[in-house]
Length: 314
Figure 1 (cartoon, helix red, strand yellow):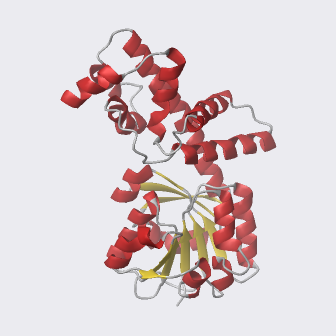
Figure 2 (cartoon, one colour):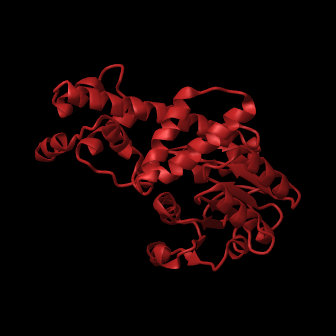
């Protein structure tokens, strides 16, 4: 019984997964723990060894994953990667999917590509859901991701038992609407992050204790999940990626492209993208998005290093 034909459960539904990076690895772990049969593919097989040890089956290509799956999830880097792993005529997942199968792309990608995948899937009597996520590595580990789903609503509802193992699914509309929602989410994060680091630079220059400052604003109108997650990391100079700068640059670039298509002027988005591009230009693309503080430090010829020492001692 395929996911498209009836009840989704570990006993009736075989799952496939393409991409086991920072996010995918934890997400796959939740599905394995729930008892699902999981077949995985990633470009570097060694990076998936932990999942294989936990019970996942390895497949040598996306098409091989799909041949053994009713629902195939993907979470890869860039739209070009999405196109390759899902739509490549000889190795892509769609080519190996049986009629009634479902593709679920959780990569942040282009809305137009999501619509293209949906049409291609329909032509094979399959279906496709665009379901990008927000919450970073912490959300993936804790199964608290926000999932923005676009596509056929009954299919999204049918897959809810699987989505609920990863976080909360929010149905946003037809094909591509999940991607549009995620891009709007990224625009909100981008300007919020600029505000966070500018506030820190200002507070530092004013001679405030930054730990006290962050604690003070966290319960007021400036408080946010972003501040809670990244504020202390910035003070500790912890720039390990929960979400890569290079991937955020990609996301914001897609946002700007869509703005041009819509005739929208979003200056906060454009500024944030330029600041993040400057990080990438400095070779910092593999750092986390909280590394934006480095760009503002360079602009103002200041450093919060002393605050990091204090935070480390606290």
